Amino acid sequence: MKPIIRLIVSGGGTGGHIYPALAIAMQVQRQVKDVDLLFVGAKGKMEMEKVPKAGFPIKGIWISGFQRSLSLQNVLFPLKLVVSLIQAYRIIKQFKPNLVVGTGGFASGPTLKIAQWLNIPTVIQEQNSYPGVTNKLLSKKVDSICVAFEGMERYFPPKKISITGNPIRLTIWETADSEKAKAFFGLYPKKQTLAIIGGSLGARRVNELIASQLELFQSLGLQVLWQCGELYYNQYKDLAQEGVVIHPFVYEMQQFYAAADFIISRAGAGSLSELSCVAKPLLLIPSPNVTANHQFHNAHALEKKGAAFVIEEKNLNADFETVFKKLVTDLDVQEGMKKELKAFAKPYAAKSIVNEMIALL
Image (cartoon, rainbow, N blue to C red):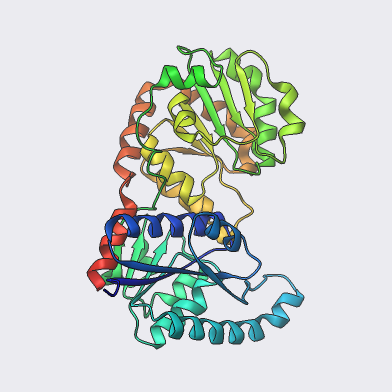
């Protein structure tokens, strides 16, 4: 019996594109009995390692991004684009998909463009409130666009948009016991806890801030659970003390979120999707070192709804203490944030996206 879906999923370059792609693929397998699935990634990028580890086949094409500064890569870009289109054509003709999904990143451009030329239904999933160049270009011919934020008709054809949310890990939003989670990390079970998420590698400016504010946190009666990132752990591990727990990386994120009463985080789209499901009072410090400043746009979209406080890195010295004190002492602010985060949350985003895909078939 032939599979109901022969699906190509393409996206990568960063975890922000890869993990949604994997979540969609896993959800397809849960919902559809008969499916053949293939990933297409960019040679030399992290998806070529992460996707096989998750148990999916992947083929690579020769493509990379266009650099904003003078670079040898820019000289090669036209050649890479032509070669990647030929490679994507060969992959698609050989695999014969009846649906192609892109989550953004280098490889999804040529792959979805070839699918569109061959009249194969295509779907894009845009994680951010400010879309990348690839998805903007593809949106004119794509059949369906799954987004996480409202107001995306500024960038995409309105009739094609479905607000599905970003796919997240299934266990993240399920409530774990707060006191047990605090004890799991060696914290006092009944004491309010500030949790800091700096990403897997870490965020230099966020870590500098936390290190300089430990006395403030303690004066407010808070204990600290700090994921500082693997790059920075050796630099900050000696600051660990009673009521200050520091980890390079936390795998048990359900426990981490359950232990938190307040959260400081970057504003990547995947993190915000998880944080909205967790619904804890939230301070966002967007990274300025990302394409099109999309973390600021993501954070601002939540701030406008009263779902989070936002401080840009350049304003941390001037604004942090005032804003943070308001976060932890103003009960009305806290309740408002929880309410708005829950309204934004889409814990079943992956299922909604797969339903959109099935509807096209």
